[in-house]
Length: 637
Image (cartoon, rainbow, N blue to C red; front, side):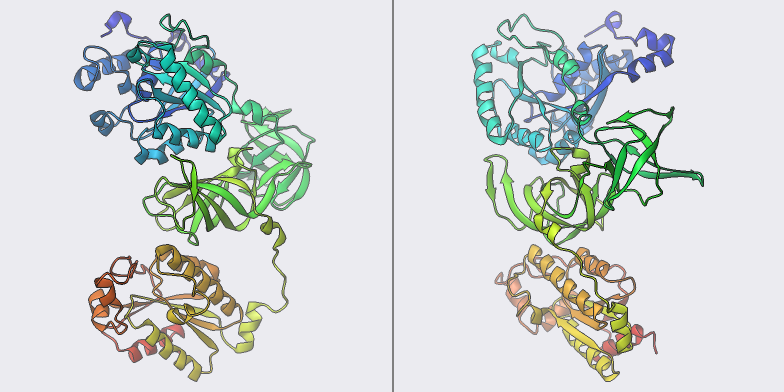
């Protein structure tokens, strides 16, 4: 253990002149990098050694490290460097990394933020989170074990996320007596695999995180290695911003800055390129053009700005521009589309279902997106592509995606800031997926809205009514179809123009190709929702009788029609009552295992939380329920 005399003390400049110390670091470049690889490859130990040997821990941290090493360490009387980053109690107990641990350190040449990412397959989503902002990846391999499944998985994800700078750190060389042949064999195996997934170049370094070989300085124990030490490479490797500054100008608008009536600017961080006053620009997706008047920063007006800087632009012309738009160089604008091919990494326990709407955030833009087609999944262990209808936790798939409005974007491999996105569950607000856009689908450029002269309001006025969509939902056997049919009879007697879409009837035609898996149920409701929307556009009162078990899909249909037109009718019948009725014998078959994915038995039903109308068929007859619904629909009139 180190004693007080060898404890690391703060930089003298930091103690004497904190402003000068901060200014010194402000002008250094920043490298973000991750460590990844399989479980127990020594990622946390490597980072701990890097921090320790570069004197980036202070006296109190060292004292805590020494105490923790004695108490829970794995190195006997020596320091356990992994404890510097394995901060969670569960990590220390299991000896593995679970969450992403970020650490800042700096040398005389550069600042660094390192992310220690989990090695276990269960926490792949955390690894993706850490890699999403990294410029470089250090992929560790245990010299005794060679290339493992998780090595391949993380390498594939690193390449997928666009990290071009890769270090292959063959760790624990001390446990193979620094054998050159062992190192060369691993590098050869990895190169064969890497070339197959598109990794064209990487730097291989033999290291020992525990002993410190080739971490800060070249080791005498590997005289056969002619490359740089790890830290030397980290200090000199080119940054992604160097490449982005050579690309055309793009600024995603984060905020319309209007402190008073005399100033209107557009604020954000420049994603790529260079800009100066007088440069012509184009605002996407509108396509409007103007000229940069001023570049405003916290330090005053600038004569130019480059990628990575946060600025406010003012334009010569008063044009429409808002959050989510992209200001681009006029002669090389970004693309705009509403349908894409993309790779998605699924990060939720609940499976991804094509047809289900999700909230999407791309750049500074927030909108609604639907996965229209799961083209194939990628088995990262074998690189095989297999068709599928859904995607489970940590799954990776190439999908087609549709958005509810045109989106300005660049392909992810050109600029992650404008080509990367996340998907969010609209009910729980949890991030469920991360995606990378490949390209816009050609059909999105060829399909346009056709203007019509007769509006939906005119159709409804002609019929003397307001269009409505009554969405009956409930368990099988609850009485949805019976009650909906009685409601339509009453509407017809009142002279109202209506149409009933029944679940069973629709499956004889429009949806005859769909089964009863969760994915098929989602697509079933999506199609019915689109048909119902067209019918309300015609001014009709539309009634639908579908189990529609998922809240997300009912919310999707609600969002298709104008506010106030969607009326959710919850036909509330307990499962035991619905099962007693079992007029079609479906519950009996489901209980016997003859009918799979049956709602209420082996497939869930999510009750409405705030239905506009609720009828309890235990307390009311079908006739009474129908009368009550009509009364509520017309407010008792």
